[in-house]
Length: 338
Image (cartoon, rainbow, N blue to C red; front, side, top):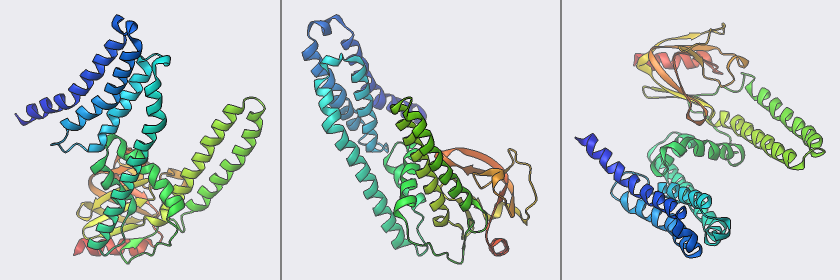
């Protein structure tokens, strides 16, 4: 019964705005539009950019749907209006794109930053241990953004935060362990960034002689890739592995992470021997075979490894590198016994 009611409610919430959009599309394709293109273009534009988002906003007032999802209908209305209206009748639409929409984008970003900052302050007041920015950012964005866009948005923000804003040295607590100092990953990523920089410069010079636009597009993509790699690299020293109560938090920067209930651990093996990676056995490092491991955790039941952009993979055995492997193993075993 509840499922039927929820379905009917969802159908109402999303169906009415979609019905209005569909009506505007049919109107734009009708013979009436060709008789009064200027007047109807203005009406369709205002309905797409104002009526549809406002209707959706009113419909979600007493629901748990984030209010920021109104922006999704605003974008849909803007895109559809751009497609169905003739170019010469997009005067008001162009004004919106030029002056209003950038303000909407800025407001959303400011709101997210405000909520994240507020959440971090609240976490610091309630918790003695170091606050993990990436986790706080995800939790906050799940409250104010559509679930489908949370992970991509959080990843992009985290790349710039760890890469260019978080320079303070991260001091480890007794329950935290680093994994980047002796693994060789940092030099490898630095080398890759250096190679990308050199290749970008050479490729840009060669492509500039053929097509300047293509040259700049590829250069921009290469620079963006370098920025992401730098953010990944910096995040490794800021997000250590930690044991908190009866939970083990395994992190590999912002690239991979998993949470393990200590009671589900079958064994912890200090080992650097090669492993056959399959659906049951994986590595915490996103570099796979390029990075060695010195610890293998075997679980009693299947768990989930979350990678970049929310990609999820199942595992039962996990290989990883820990700088202080023996202390790590002993602390886990002690926590399990307690």
